[in-house]
Picture (cartoon, rainbow, N blue to C red):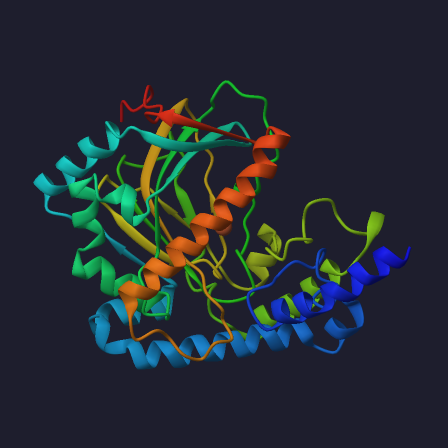
Length: 348
Ligand SMILES: [Fe+2]
């Protein structure tokens, strides 16, 4: 009893730190998940402050990218560029990734087998075409601007195996949702062409903006997310990635866009905007260079040393992944292997 009380007390500093950083779990953090604090506006306050600081940093970083890209990103919540790399360079990159052999993490989402490799500086050094992409100044500047943090993202290769012969698990990627309570970006360079056969990305343009309707929706969701036990809809709110229904989207005046795009298309999206992974109609693969840039939304500043900071984040995240591996491997949720990506169904 005494030991559990001490443990509880020790967790308070951690919960407080999470409150002023990117913590989002209504289940694991009793401050974030407090009904009365959220009734008084804690969640909407976090949303508003994070959004204001994001816009402030974007203003300062504006010189990084052309005005047209900035306008599109601010208006729609994403930037899309077809034929991003010169065709010969893209063909070389695609060949390099197809034949990549290394450490792969594999897990099941729905009936999809997701294979991912975290592309650290060391892993990249053996892949000249991947390295050339990472160093492409257009990509570098776009990611540094859109993340509002002026640092390169974390890079992965992601290969989806749709309708894989697996025991299905719940698939959080198929529900329309916002990743978290603050703006942050993910990026995809599509190695395969994408259409209904292999599951296009679906995004709701404009849903990243903080309208009055969105704010009211956030408030309602925050109160729902505080519900405990049987009062809480299963799997829907506890992690802070709020799900949105088709009716709620219509009420907020939104329409979704399906990204059926050719190979060699770059998409950078603000995942505070609503999005989901579209259904794949066939047994198929979808490979992307996947990029992620999440940072403390309440830090009003950004780094002045993009590359060094990028390396530091990469190092820290590498350690976190290894730690997370232990639990996921032990529970059977994840499998790690050394080898090639599965690419049997790539006849697109
Ligand atoms: Fe998401």
